[in-house]
Image (cartoon, rainbow, N blue to C red; front, side, top):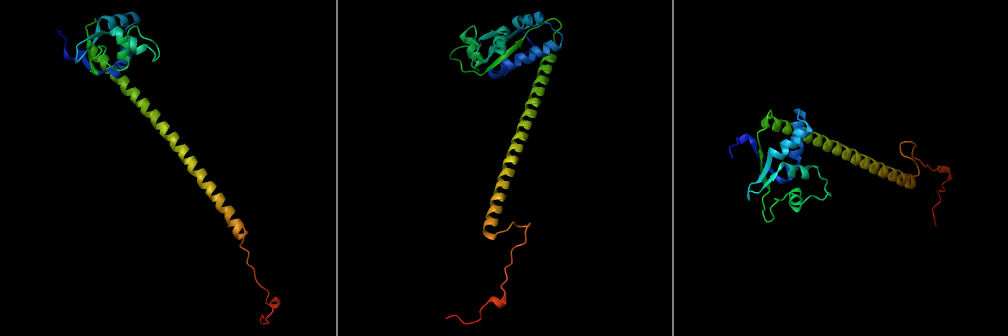
Length: 189
């Protein structure tokens, strides 16, 4: 195992499939065709469990990267890998080392940097979507509060009309005066 340190990358199992997709996108941007991508991933990329040392090929990682959640995989080992567990039953490691082999015209360091930029762009898009979601929630909450305040004001208006007999600010309050001539000044019996 005579590889340089930049050609080895340790990753969590739950991010292995997304890393594969980002690497494939970066390789595609670098000008590698479909057949070359297949050869690179099948012969020049492998993953190894950091705890038990079991190895899987890049093709196996590709199976979990492109398979839908409900799609059955060729074997139970890949199903374990898709769910974030080591392929060896009984191993409780959550990390694998990815080994990148030499390929003519391929600089893995540059490809990994491009893949990391894809990660940053994806995180920025996810953050933007989250902000838009929170703005939508704020608008919904503001609408609910405004409707609640409007309902309370209408109820207070009806209460005022019922007990005082006029609409405040639109009508002057009724001032009842008594005609002094109509009042009998005789003492009551």
